Image (cartoon, rainbow, N blue to C red; front, side):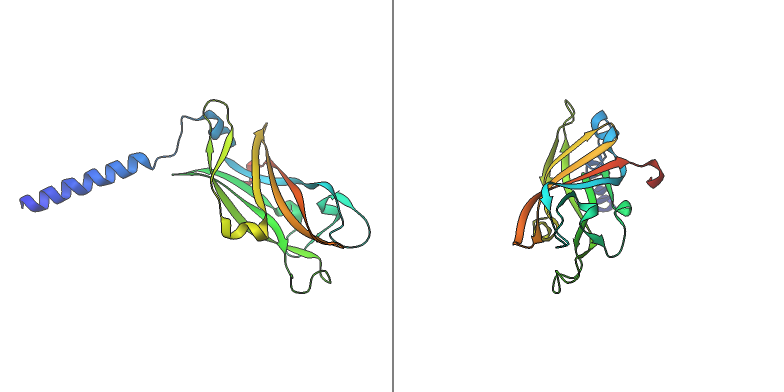
Length: 180
């Protein structure tokens, strides 16, 4: 009976200790403001690109690529604060890379990064990367938040008439309460 009681107490303490360290951070007002779901409002590159190989260059990627499955408006992002802080988002990826550029359409793929949000100034630091996905989906460089707008900046390669070229890709999202 004594052994059972000691085991029960030890198990209870282990649960309490693990629970206390797994709680979301509710003391960070920057993180609390950022937490939520977002809908893509803009997607663009720093320099003009001709991804559809029609001879016209644009920075606005809604003018350059077709979405094979969902239109751009359905691309979303989310910042969560449940046991860990994470941003997850959908990004356009080539849907038919083996026949590209004959079919320059994109599908969506989900990716995510673990984050730390400073309590003092709201600065966002990436703490863990999905390295195995970054070659296809781009490498997230910077995350910023201001007035319900989430801005993800990533480095990404696109196929062009001159072959694969690196670009800086901007994905700008607006907080959308209808998604919550």
